[in-house]
Length: 320
Image 1 (cartoon, helix red, strand yellow):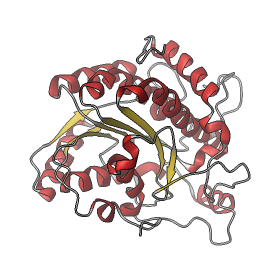
Image 2 (cartoon, rainbow, N blue to C red):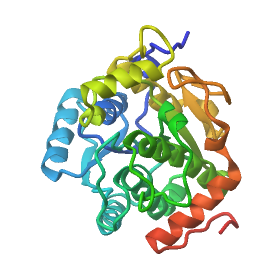
Image 3 (tube, rainbow, N blue to C red):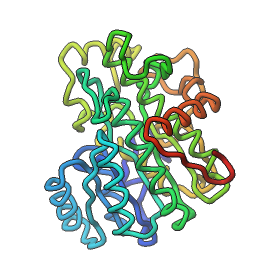
């Protein structure tokens, strides 16, 4: 029986993934690397993507050695620069004409105020805007590889904030790193809903995944002791968060990538290897999602704004 402590290796046990070609962003360390490792061990062709070319070259070689799988390559991808995103997408299309699983895993959490190359708040830029452009540029390759899946990593942290469309970039309001993180994670979910609306009838399904709270990842590199105390309080329990192992953290992602049901079920929030349900009264440490995070109208508003900010228009399946 699958439960919240199941590992990615357990989820994939017995599967032959030699027919899968997947691209995993943020695969240098942590969840991205573990996700790529476990999929590669079952025979999938994997591209690991990250902003440090030398590091990604090393990771690809390490994963190939560990898995005995020689179908692992790497891609330089800096999500904080739209020009770099365009270059990465073009490079990937040169490398592989088509593929069928895109796992948008990369992100940044609770960092000090910083801005992308285009001047956008860094958490929103790296978690959402860069992935928005990268994904949309690769949609033709996903359609060629259909049936295909897009998995956007979000977080229970989406409960910290909705998207503030009046000041996403903190130009007028005081910067709050946790509020900004919540906004970025909500954006991941709204993007999933809007992209699913466009691709669902074309053989591509899109879901959002909350991996759980994991310590063994670089995502918390900006956290201070007071942040961990705050997280414990926000968990809503005396013991604080029930942290998962790295393997358990990657489990829901690989489940979304491989479970037969997600060839048809989409536009969902997945957590603990189950389909999350709406819960308006949750605290950060409890399950479920805020209804605003899967709101179709908000997803369309974010889609329109994201197109404006990346300076490109995308439309498939009769949807603008």
